[in-house]
Length: 196
Image 1 (cartoon, helix red, strand yellow):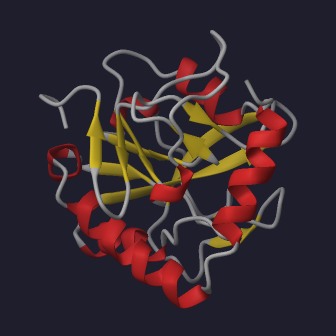
Image 2 (image 1 turned 180 degrees about the vertical axis):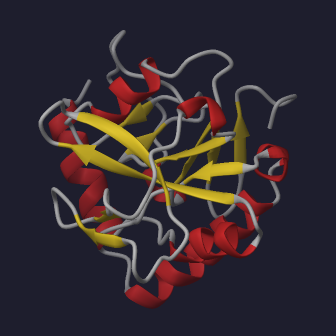
């Protein structure tokens, strides 16, 4: 099987080859599917993330969560502990700043931390996925560690990706954490269909 590093390079090259208009159109279709999930409708607090580079553009989803009256939470990387912290964001223009990799994150001085137990749905980023919920991240292990640390009951873990990011198999280990549901522009793959 191909190495994780090689898979990342191949999938990122394909993903980054999408032109801006196509990426936005596909992202709009993904957003519509996300908003239709039962897990989204049931969640009072949704943890999303601010996309960067060629990722699925989360801006439409984040705006919809914010406009719906649900609590919007976004991750912040704590560089010292190499952990993800969850913060509630109420003002997307004022309360975000460039974080560790230049990705917009909540400002600690303006955004209160949110206990994971209050989050009903977590939007999980990644480079590649399988229909079985296996996920290949960017290589830092931040989300794998974050997911392992979630208590019980755990929020719904939902990944959103372009269909070109779906592979038949991935080299995974016991440390790699799965998602409960994967949403693309064309389909939803649910591992726990009764909950999502």
